Amino acid sequence: MTNDPMTKDRELDLWREQWSSVARPSPELKRQVQKRIKVQNRRFWLGNLLAVAALVGVLILAIYQLSHPASGLEKGRATGVCVLLFVAVACRLWISRGTWRAETQSVRAFVELWHRRVLARIRGLQIAIYLAIGWIVFCTGLAAANWVTIRLELIAHPTEYLAMMVVLVVMLRLIWFGVMWLRRRKVAELNEVTRILEEMQTMND
Amino acid sequence: MSTQSTDSFASRVGIVRETRRTLEQQFDRILGEHGAVISRLAYSYEAVAGMREELVQEIALAIWQALPHFRGECSERTFVFRIAHNRGLTHVGRRRPPQQSLDDLEEADEPVDPRPHPDEHLAQMNQRERLASAVQSLPVAHKQTIVMMLEGLSHAEIGEVLGITENNVAVRLTRARKALKEAMGVTQ
Image: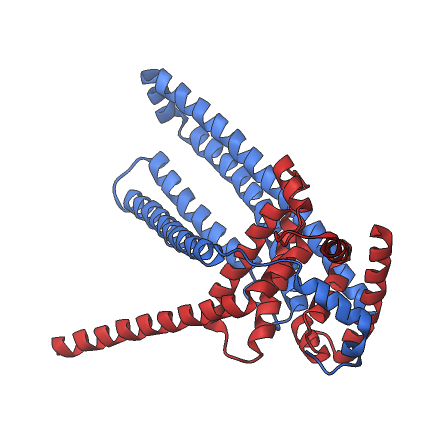
């Protein structure tokens, strides 16, 4: 209890009395939280492991193709993957500036950090869209430059190529809808955080 | 050489295990001491019972994650309130438009205390629910100040949690109290 004059206030005492019986923790809370901790730890390790494995795998493949005698198409693809990965990681680090930790430990600092994080996420999605467009353009250019090789392959295995194209188009559409859905969610979250931040600002004025 | 490095590894593992055990004990104690506060705070942010339960778990999880970084710069109570408010805000910000199931709606209207209540107790319960729904309806900044006031935090502690001066806390409290009274009047 505080020594504020308000504690002598009967209305406040009554509110405090009523408030103290508003909600009780579930007896299962500890068990449920332990379960969530385990799930989260597992997800964290698995996620990181998969990301590192994918990154290392793609890099090894790219370096292998670059250092061994391969066709122009393979070399171009390997170079493209390396450049794309480098640019993606660099962009991720660049847009994450100032979003690692809050300036102070207050709720206000947390909301400001949250605002910066959501903005960074939206920017990240925007950059991902540009990178995807860049990648499609690059692939088209690469295919045009190596059309002679591709044409022969295409004539030899038309069904495989058609199936691959269909899968690619479906995947692109799915990724596009996924990104757009995530972007809409993040924009809605940004509006909400901005509202909360403005509300906090107004209360301080 | 090899025995030395094995010993050193074993002692490191021992230290890690000991630290984890200490953290677990601290976490259990915090949940025991502040569990009710966390539940009430979640109640101020979320009216739907199922989602509230979810929020309480999220807060507890966030406390567990932040515990290794807690160096005692503030009181444990302030630490818990700060994390709980942060998590509550994130919950509000990420909440989708309400899609309540009938079960949830029934649960939301259920009395929190399941004890049988005669008429007198029923009146008290109505008062309590009126206060709770009024707190839920307040703007975030008012809600945070009011909840901490109801939990008995001092002006200095509220200021520390919210990152504002004590004078600012006093001003906010006056406004928040007025808003709460109005909200209770509206819901009456």
